[in-house]
Length: 169
Image 1 (cartoon, rainbow, N blue to C red):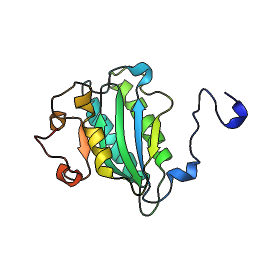
Image 2 (image 1 turned 180 degrees about the vertical axis):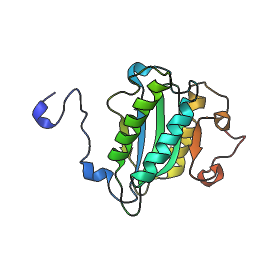
Image 3 (image 1 turned 30 degrees about the vertical axis):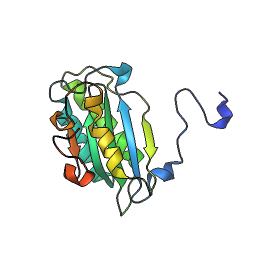
């Protein structure tokens, strides 16, 4: 790869940071553990992750749509608030805080891979399908039989608002 084209091994090509600050822009993220270690569902780790997500969202002008903690990665959809916010600062704050707190609670660090996967959601794209993909991830990974059985997820609205019904996979 050519370094002068914006590609490096350590830093994948990202959109301009301003793209993560557009009011009401929704972005889907996947954040993986270092070396794909299955540590995120140990002990009270899901509670720490939930607290960190919501705290950082509130303080960085971000609204969470949904999240799902898997053993070795975290999926979430978030949007920049109407009054503005910064998804990159939100993610940095989340990873920094959990990277410090979880080792203090006995989860060996480092916790996170340096980078993350993200995908900006188009305005005409249905959030329902993206939310369904995220909450059905534990079923696809064989961790539970039905999406509503997985305890480590959260939705901004009731599942029915996304076309999700308990008892229907």
